[in-house]
Structure formats: C-alpha cells, structure tokens
Length: 139
Ligand code: ATP
Ligand code: MG
Image 1 (cartoon, helix red, strand yellow):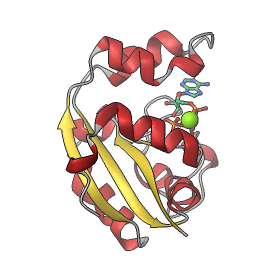
Image 2 (cartoon, protein in one colour):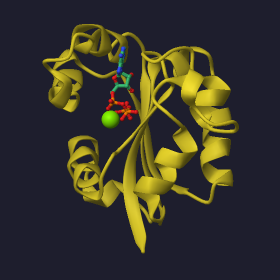
Image 3 (tube, helix red, strand yellow):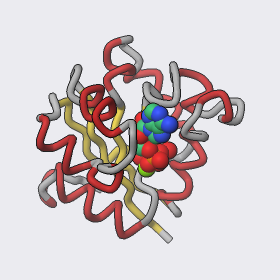
Image 4 (cartoon, helix red, strand yellow):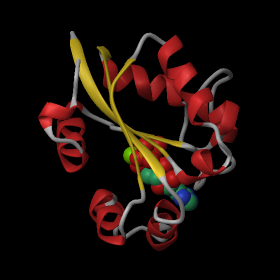
C-alpha cells in the first residue's frame, strides 16, 4: 500500500552537512523523496508542530533547537512509508537505535537526533499539509 510520510532533517544534521548522507540512507531503503525544501522554522511553526509535547519538560528546549538552524522538510513515498521510515530512523534515543539506522549512524543525543518522521498515516497528512502545497509534491 503506497503511502506518504513527512520527514524533517533537523538542525544538528544541516549544521554538520549531513543532508546528502541522510538522503542516501532514505533512498537506499526504497523510500522516494517526492518533495523537499530547506527552511528556517519559525517559533510559531515549531510550537505548532510539536504541540502534542507542550506539557513535556523538554518542550522549550525542543522548540529552541528546531528553530536554531535551517531544517529540510520532506515528503517520502513508498509502500508502508510511515512505518518503513520509523524503522529507517531508529529509536528516538540513538543509544537505543539499531545498527544502520539514521539515528544510530548520525544522531548526537535524544534531543539532537537528526530526523523526524510521522508516527501515523493520519499525522503524516496533517504534517505534510503544514509545510507543503499539494501541487509541490511530485510523486
Ligand atoms: P520525532 O517526533 O521527532 O520523529 P519521535 O517520534 O521518535 O521523534 P517523540 O516522542 O515524538 O519522538 O519526541 C519528539 C522529539 O522530542 C524527539 O525526536 C526528540 O528530539 C525530543 N525528545 C523526546 N524525548 C526527549 C527527552 N527525554 N529529552 C529531550 N528531547 C526529547
Ligand atoms: Mg514523534
């Protein structure tokens, strides 16, 4: 079942010039990058995007981190793309991530963990719509 998921290459990744290396892992996994744009997230975009975590103790630091440098927002497409990309990313904490995953290969810490991926098909649709117009996604 072909799906789309939303991905962010986070500030720790763009700062270290890792966008190409991370895209290579994404593409080697079989996922196709069907839209991609480099942006500086605004405070409001980051706060809205992580609204589910508003009450968590790390929320302020998370918003600060996500606005600290450019990010690359992406739409990925492929069979079961949501679950597939979660597998390719690895666990939130890189110390717990499996070998070969993006977070094991590149992440610095649980906060600076290089990538975001949607956690459900419904959230993927919501997140994609926050950052992309439909005509800018070319599948
Ligand atoms: P993401 O939503 O970014 O794809 P995730 O779904 O693996 O990551 P969530 O539980 O949704 O993890 O947390 C969102 C983000 O908040 C994490 O990616 C991480 O950057 C940050 N975060 C989560 N837990 C912590 C923590 N204990 N300390 C610091 N930052 C955290
Ligand atoms: Mg999440």
